[in-house]
Length: 417
Ligand code: UD1
Image (cartoon, rainbow, N blue to C red; front, top):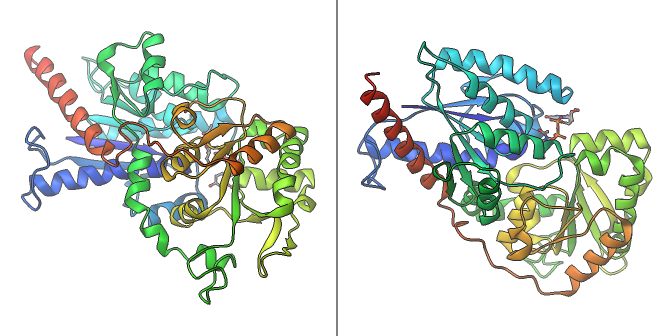
């Protein structure tokens, strides 16, 4: 059995890693090198094939994550790089089709909602290996999420991907309702939990060994901040085109952060897209930090830093007093860690992080952001972890894939193929 896992951009890597890990553990058990986790598991060795489209290619956006997550080197690198949505998607499709025809996997797994996700799913849905039209089963990990905002490229990617896939692995209850509403057959929908949280739980303790707080001067070995305690700071990420590509929108968000920046340092690991926009718009002066009066050695203001690897960022999230973001995954990670989160968007495709978790939606206007920050800092965070976010999602997914493939092979054998 050959399972191809397609990844391309930063948020894909932590969602795919637990699945590859689960395949390795399955193979060890088949070879008798570890106990069988599940009596129903197939007795075949699974051949994994990791394909990286190269949508993200910088060391800090890609390789650093492979190292931190202990991901194997990709078997195939498509090297597509950046471009317009059409160019990037088309280039991935062209190059991925060649890989599929050569490798002929039994299953293709796509994760998340980036251009690589849609491109690989679409190619697989239309490929044909023989006159019978046989093609791999297609599984979407993180299916069913909807922001109901089609101006987001990710929303278009999510909807189209879900509608061409055979197996839809859903992270939260809302996703199941969304898929049913769109007429997706019940047998395709599997509420399994969240592989991003599998990674989070697997690496949470390792992140404690990160030296990022020391490197940023926020924690000292000499007990300046009570030994193990870091100086209080907030953490910020912004990269959505709607938030950073237009100066009025971007400035309105930065204005909403000023009150917090006047009393605390806000660490801002800058995504390459955002970095470009800051240069183009001449916004550098917004990011000057000042020495704090209260804590010698710490600063106030918004402090720009380079994009961080997985473990360094996880360490910063765990120790932050507040996280402010427009990312999807960070809303989930902060919910799981019990860290208050302010999401700088009008909507979220992850409503469970609000109903159960620590997230609030602030919108994108100055006053709303200021108010949400004040409220989050003044309240005790709720810390209910959503159902199935238990670190065991990847084995559930692998089990469901093996069962679906077994069923399909029986049908094909019955038809004399
Ligand atoms: C993509 C995803 C988004 C995800 C984000 C996480 C889509 C539609 N968007 O957005 O959902 O949240 O990744 O980071 O797939 N660049 C580099 N180095 C890199 C990659 C990109 O410098 O390794 C620069 C390029 O100049 C590029 C820009 O960043 O033009 C944007 O990259 P792109 O892949 O187009 O989209 P993201 O904004 O990263």
